[in-house]
Structures are given as C-alpha cells and as structure tokens.
Length: 312
Image 1 (spheres, one colour):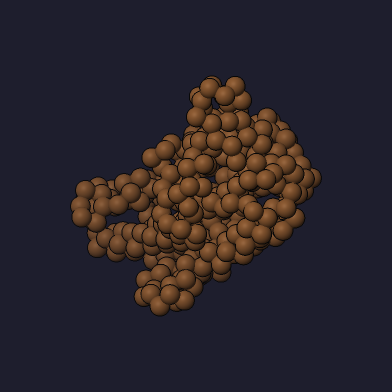
Image 2 (image 1 turned 45 degrees about the vertical axis):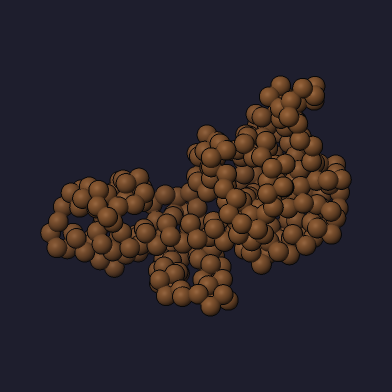
C-alpha cells in the first residue's frame, strides 16, 4: 500500500495518497465509515450481501460491486465492517484476497472472534496480503462524526502504513495499538463485556436503591460522583431513565460476543464467574425478547423481574 509524505502530486495535498479501497459491509457502522473514506478522497467500491444497500452507498459517492471479489479486484486496501464472525468468514473467501493489488493490506473493523480472525489472516497471508485488525468502538453517530475508537492488533510497521487511511475514520489519539494479532479483537470484546456488565450491575443497584426508598435521580448523581462512578452512569444512564434501551445493536449479537469472550477465558484458564453471570442475563433476555435491537434489554429484563421501571 503506497504511503505519501507530501509533494508527490498523487495525494490530496496533505500527504495522504488517494487509495483504491474495497469495502465489504454497508451496515449501520460500515456505511458511515465508508462515507468517511470517500470524503477523504479515496476511491471506494462497496459490496454488501443486501442489494438494497446500493442506493445508500452510491449516495455517499462510492461505487457498488456485485460481489466481494469484484469489489476487491485491483484494490490496494480491503476494509471489512461485518456484523460478526460468521459473516466475515463467509464474505472473505480466499478469492477475495487473491485479486487484491500486490502489497495490499486487509483492515478488519469487524467485532470478530480471534479464532475466525486467525483463519482469515491465514487466507490473506497466503496471497501476500498484510493484515491489521481494528475493530470499532462507538455508535453509528460516532462513526459519522469520525470519533470512533480503533482497537488495533497487528504490527507497528503495518499500522504506520495504514495510519493516514485510519485517520480518515477517527483522530490519531483514538487509534490504540494494543498488541499483536488477536489482541485487537480481544480488547474490543473486553470493552463490551465490561460495558454490559456495568449496565447490569448498575441496574441491580438502582433497583435495590429504589426498593429501599431512595430517589433514583439523587442516587444517580451520588453514584456518578463517587468511587463507583463510571461513564455508563454519567453518560448512558440518562437514556435508560428516558425509556431508551439503545436500539443500535442486536441482542443476539451481544450474546454471541459474550459467548466468545467467556470461551476465551475458559481456553486460557482465566477466572470468568462474573463474565458468565453477565452472559447468563443476556441469554435470558434473548429468550424473553428475541433477536431484536436493544443494548440495554438485559436491564429491561431485570426491571420485569423487579416489577418496576428505572424512571426517576
């Protein structure tokens, strides 16, 4: 993948080369990320298994391909933003890597499973394609504004080559190299485990506080300024108090991710009792509500069990 430091005539004037980017996955996160690449001056060709996404993609100024192989043909960078490991393994077949340009890089922004990532990394490596995993942290709105977090796993050298492209998606201080292959995926899953765990633990505490007669608004403010304070309490609790269960991600996907990280803990011989409890609540929520969108539906289940809503 070419890198420019300015003065070449092929760049945008700021030292960033306009690249041919193959983009696989135009969902809620992928679409705004794609738009960021187009706005940065890159030539982006998109494939998604849903043909109805073509209009939204073309409205961004990106091209549309009928297959991942067609999108990847001659591209210098392949970017994937897929719903999960199953979709990544299915979409990124061997032929996709085989048609990329010499010296190409694959950047996987999927919240992928490390085991699936290893399989795909081997496919890419067989064709001389370098790999950088950079799963996204944040919401679709964050992606559109260019303020997501990237949890990067891979080599420093590959990250250095890819930084100009990644900085179209977010600021330099939000790109974190956390380790070698697999480390980016694990870090993203750990972030999700802790966030969902905080949501469940906070909801239990608030329900208990309400039963004890404490005003929820007062309790929230006290907790936010205490040693128990967290970003969840300070930032996300207001949505819950307003009856918003954050329908930006599927409950079945949440269950899948929690299963992957608890499986990693078992395989590595690391304690995972709390993680198991968080997973159990989300499995029960999935049984109760089905595979619908709602990042806080486990809290809705706790509210049902308590017979009350968390509303000040």
